[in-house]
Image (cartoon, rainbow, N blue to C red; front, side):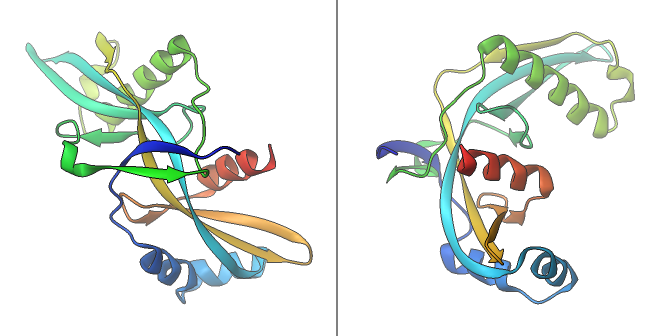
Length: 184
């Protein structure tokens, strides 16, 4: 792995907070420990996201939103922004723990369109079905920070992911995403 300097959205969870989260007592943690073993270590990792501006018409008014889709395979949750992150919300990080974009523009556009439609629909805009959504990719890439907790017992290692911006532990989809990257 080569080291690179990447532009990262400033995390809201520190290493210590991630460690406390991955070590917390509770039913979810007990289940994870029984299934995967005890926490061995944690590491930061950065995922590239492409930003998109979406416009759609609802009841004769045009609405818009800013979204970000992971540029690796599009499987992680969308980020939504009221506005693009300002310079003070970003920082440069020198690291080896980053994934490379792998989606084509066409794949990404299709995925973001589907995810935006779902996100808008879940907000209660039930009449959006069949509405026209315009998607424009914005220039650049922003890396989103995640904390990975590595658990192991009997020769196996599993990882659990924490979104360091939203300060939440992700589900099995994100764990599989990072485990596949680590296995490659």
